Length: 95
Image 1 (cartoon, helix red, strand yellow):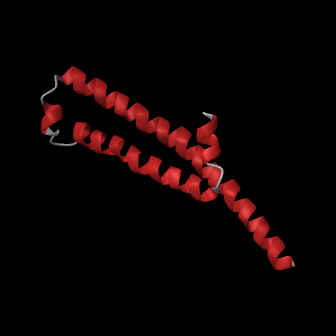
Image 2 (cartoon, rainbow, N blue to C red):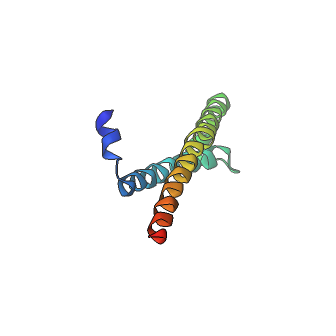
Image 3 (tube, rainbow, N blue to C red):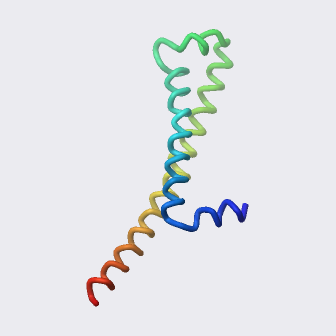
């Protein structure tokens, strides 16, 4: 765990990590559209209705967690980073 945190020390590495996370999490959207879309994707249509409903529920919960927890954290963190950057720029302009 510590090696993961230390690898995100630089802002550039942190942003790259976020970009990778956001690219990979798009799979949730793709599967949600395939399960809940009309018509249902052929692979999911082969599942019994109760399995499809359970899968849709789990995908929705995972998406909601990502939206409410992960994105909220990232937006707040980015706001802090921008605030620090603005303060550094203000000091630089004052000199």
